[in-house]
Length: 431
Image (cartoon, rainbow, N blue to C red):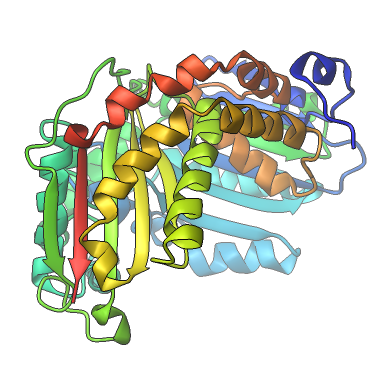
């Protein structure tokens, strides 16, 4: 098997669909990223509104997203029927903390109509109906996430300990709280729409079989291109150079009492360890390497050696200027629940100082680049939007390659002080 170094990979011809995007900003501020697929009979379009649940009052962005499609001239059902009749799709909204997204796929000869429908939805809408219906829908959605009244309060407590003055301490859920959902009114929704749904605050990511010239002409003549609606791009969150200590380092909650669980799962022990790391210390590429090192060490120690659990889940979520790292240990044996935090302490230091593990996972990431399978255009578009979230640009495969190649063990070791025991919050969920 050939093991490529970064320098060798730079010389290997790698298919890089992200390098094929062209960018243009219209005079009204609308940003367009376009990728041409010769002879392709269809076009996929995704719209990224650069505002999400972190903006405005809690729950408003998500509530508004529920109303966008049905307050359009066509209505949600007709839009879906139109796109699906051609074998395409319509995605009428998904809200995250950072943005709100909409999209569709249609044959090239129907692109103009699709741009007209979605353009009107995103810049020319007046919210007038279905507010109480969607309030009920969102309330049911909320009850699925928080089955008992106290469960939200427990999550709020964790957030306030972890994030303190940061906006994540206020925005516990994309949905908002039960009180937020009950009290949001039409003026708040229309005000949020008027402020955030404007061409300057929207990026369009397109991939399809029409030329850039033809596609651009259609966009310029669509409601999005013609709109003179005033507004500014929602500013990117500042990058933090340092974080803060949680006010406590350990909590215990009852699955049954605090979360209202009644299933067999309520009898399990579950540990969730969280820590906040500034973006200046960690990047996505560094986490790919460091996360692999941590998972390998914990899995070896906790499952293979001690037989305390079946699986371990490790993740890093980027929230603007900081990463929130999670180590989740579900279905723990009861004796393990009393010892596992100290074992995790030891494993983290061991993992992040191992040159062997660093070399192994850096090599893995470098070699995985040439194995990537870029078949689904929708996945490429979603990857592009993720890049816009995190870096405000679409990163190419060669960009990632350069980041992996530049990674040093010292960069990984710099994480140690940021995930020290006094900076982590561990929550044990027990029967």
